[in-house]
Length: 322
Image (cartoon, rainbow, N blue to C red):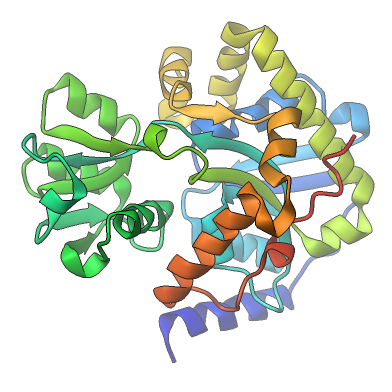
């Protein structure tokens, strides 16, 4: 049995242990990431409570643990990239994206030798990245765009943080990582940022995905969740400095300082009502649909999917029009 099959079996088993759904409460698992700041902003400003909803954001740095929590019913959903959640979707474990939070505009990148000028210059080199993560997904899109595959390089599996550290120490020539490591490499003049996500808008998109039974049994909660996020985005646009202070405190970790949060926020585009409408417009033929299609091609080709994930299997936009 493959690792992918084992994960699917484990998730299906956890699903059977699901806890009873509680109306008026949504627990979300997520990593420490600047793009999730508006969840904490809406919570702190009471926007969710206005709709009778309590949202409990829980920082869990390992995506597989978050999804195990979703499978068991301990969590009602997650904030993660579209490609990330695709890898956990099974016929038994149903969840769908109901809101798009942000996309990476420079927050992710490839650190490479100073004399590298294109992906072709990386052929034959060791590339540190976290296999199965958005880094691998994004890197494979770039390879595909340049007529290359992973066979043209040597993937060394390590976390994004470890890849950046190894690059800075001269232990590996290439690293696919994210902030604050890109800025640190620039400041210390170690190698160069060969490509960053500001050159590939709309490819690394974070969403909130909820269990299908939560969506079906408690639609008013989902409506309140989306409404609260809409209001938080408007507050951010009107009160950026204060919003960053609140968001930094909520997200915490390496982003707990508002200055660090603001610096990292420069590398993302926060979504609101208008951008959500644009992103999900056109359904399977639109921007979001094409991204799901890319996920199917890349993760499917790497044997990371449990099922043939289609747009309608992964997205529910009924709560966006309010």
